Image 1: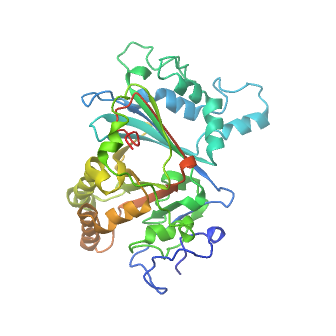
Image 2: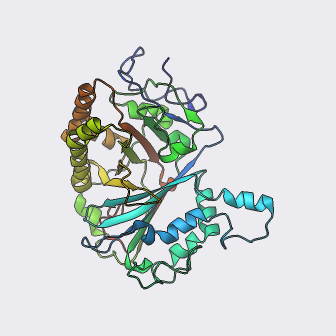
Image 3: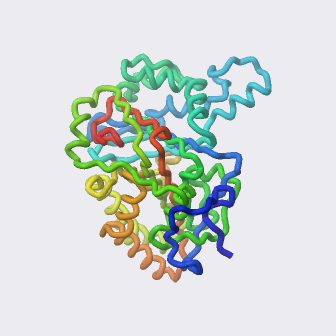
Length: 401
């Protein structure tokens, strides 16, 4: 039996009509949503990245460049100098909750060709949870010292540049943080199977839904978003690319704080082919993956013409051994609003090619695919965004908007 993608406690009488083709609609293939505990009403999604200062530079190994950030994430329980050390069980339990529920190590080339490495971390709770972690772990003091090179030590080592072995100093690279605090009514997920839930914020789920009705029709993403029941989620339109960049071209060596945008739409859309048998892997890498890359490159390089502020095609790295292929990627894009994302999905040649090639891919495998797909979408109020860039080039993220 099909379920609604919107859980019962977030369902509201609709003032905005659903896009469902008809009441008896049944999708041709199954998809699933993450179900969160009702006690979780907000999430934190924090992207913290280092950026090479030129296209020729490579930030490798990523774990070395990101060592301070990873240390703050892993040692936010007070056991490595970040707490009061009083040993009281209740205090230690409270501090342990400051650590994120999950984080991913990532790598990508941006619109200017610069190499970026970073983490995406997730917490249950809102801005206050992130701020408590940032203060208690020492991250906030470290972050504030980046611009003048006065960052204090991370919990695990005096500094990432103390060894003299050619490691990048923290001040030799640009840094940025893009932190989002969606309420659960402004967040939605979809997964190609019930076993694909170990992605994004869904790692905080209570469970997975059964097959959902809102899937495989234009507008199904909007229909899965609880807020869309009563809100059209219109965003801010940028009038020209010239206006976008003029304000930031001379500011790449300073700290830039970008104000939040009304109903900014953020999508993380992932692909995992690690469980494939050789024949399917070959078919995916030779016929499906190149079409996907072409679409992501369009959004990265020309996306602002259709309302996409920024797009990164990201490789996930193995936290234990980043030389190991994870066979996991995701597109990470920021759109003016959900409507802009919907228009690209429904009518632009690059996405129609992705969609058409995927249908052919499924047909060639008689529907027996091991490719795991997921996405999470956030539609954010201005106050649910924290956007800050230190010594980054002007095409970074939302700097130019």
